[in-house]
Length: 163
Image 1 (cartoon, rainbow, N blue to C red):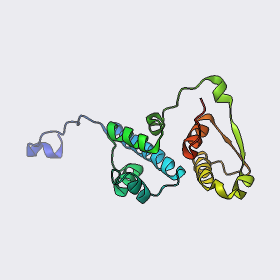
Image 2 (image 1 turned 135 degrees about the vertical axis):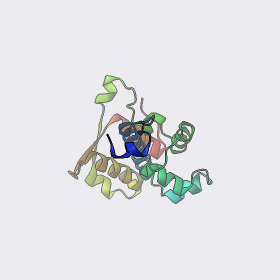
Image 3 (image 1 turned 120 degrees about the horizontal axis):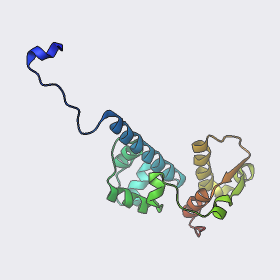
Image 4 (image 1 turned 90 degrees about the horizontal axis):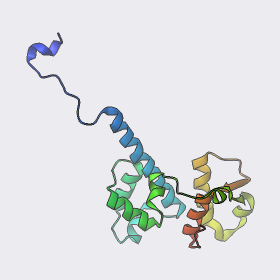
């Protein structure tokens, strides 16, 4: 007999969502938020600039809360944010984009020392830095851009997206 049985209190029934599912949801929101932040930073935008460029559609505090995983995005808002950043929704969800084997093998190797000397390449350096941090690849000399990295870079600089 439990101590509270004599009080006539009903036993607590498990809720519709278990703790493990809540943890998974929180982890997923956090990972979407991390990708949102990486994309925003790669585009060289502050939270305030997102608010200004979206003409108030995306407040700095709301975007910051999404990035930290403190607020959950609805699907329509997720799509809207993806459109604002000009990235596929699948990128925000962490889904691999379909590509053929030959595209998977294509890579571009950047000489980071030369890139550091090109004054006009500041947005590209920020993008490259976000990749370095995400990969934990701090060798400092070269960086291989994968096909998806190249697509994101083309979006950032306004070039044609490779297929």
